[in-house]
Length: 359
Image (cartoon, rainbow, N blue to C red; front, side, top):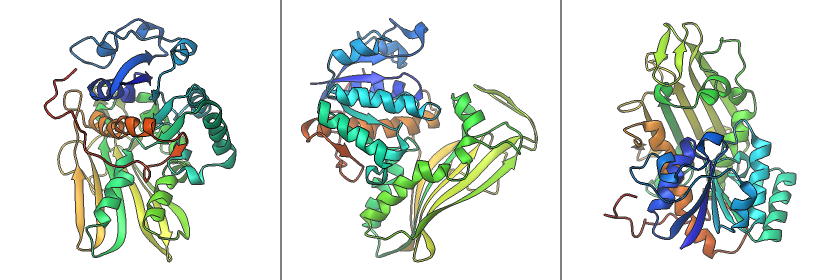
């Protein structure tokens, strides 16, 4: 069994604990938390399970890594603390761990990561013998393995479009929703996530990854952005009130330009309430979906709707992305130390979980 540490117990960390506990090749060896109120609480409780897992949470990073876990699921946020997340991940790699995480945007396609960051990771791998695999949380498979698999079913492809369409009404991440994305802020507020160049920094690696897999040469990557205000004040279950006239919906595209045309597109359509921007794309049902559209011959569309934690679709999206990361651990543990991306990690059946009792 592969001893696995889950670092962080927020939206991603809860799903990671459940995934590790359910995986037949892994054993949950530890859980790291930042909030003092969580220290000592059982991992099963923190993950929303009906049973205890016998693993108390700790905030002692040194002790957790000194126990030499073979793998670390780094689930702490990298959105508002990128330097701290990078430093944490280097520590885990130096400790000899296989690290899987969505937190380092620059390493979705590690070949295009900034040279200074890549060199630091390579040095940590050489020192400790660990590995790194980064895949997105929006979710990564929706912007790499799924669209690439679908292209193998087509005769010709003009455009590969990957969409995330979500209503964040029930999303329990107020800092990200209000300040990073700007929901509920005045329309002249500049959300950090939407600043020029930032979407390319976050999703450009996935564009490059798909282009490389398809043997296409990118001319450039460009961005489009549209924002809409709320017509009425609305109240959400988990994040309170959002006033009329403030930002209520965002739509942007990161476009891979090939031969002068946008050929590989990652599009996000995000609302804080379903009534805002009703003319924009909407999910087939409910409050969210991920969709891949191949414009070509034949025209192919695949929509994925995942739910978790009592039917929450944002939680379902997190869980499927975490499933891809956690499902890669045993393969990575058997591979040579190094940097890996979504094209390296095989997409495999989940052997041993069919009919298995829930933890």
